[in-house]
Length: 252
Image (cartoon, rainbow, N blue to C red; front, side):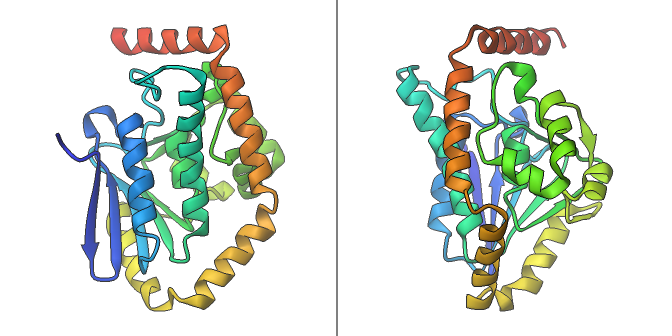
């Protein structure tokens, strides 16, 4: 079986690549578990680059494959949501620089993962979207606070409540993206190489200070989001939203 997350070392740089290209790197149970494990195992890296293989960074949760493939009950769902939130805790607390190289699509949980990075480099052709509300679902990785801090209250409400697409040029203009590059993977590695010599206590303590200043109540936010997501997943409208999505995919 192919590895759903690839790991590569280039000197001081660790590169983690989401590797479900045929599904636009959509998150299923296997990818979720593998990504959490890889981030945890590389918490002492000098620099960490996140990227996606194929045509996209990550198309979000794979709505054609459940995150609860075993029991399919509320407890298994909550465990999956907690794993998504563990990505938030890990990436925002890693002492090293985390750089996301984003291309193609960054949707839902995929966009949330990208925006957990310290620096976000995107191709000008990248498209972002937070479609959870349109699917009867709710965001789960702290994005309700993180996006608000990045783009302001009213813009965050607009993006999260309407689920509209925005391109990387707009995302850069409103503060979601650090910089634009035609080859975001190459640029991310270049930035990682530049930052590697400074990935020491000063970097980690400064990063922690910024995170605490911006998100002093992160655990409260994550708990509220997981409760909301669990509540929404159990609703009829969520089932109808997922069914409509699958139908559109089959017809397209």
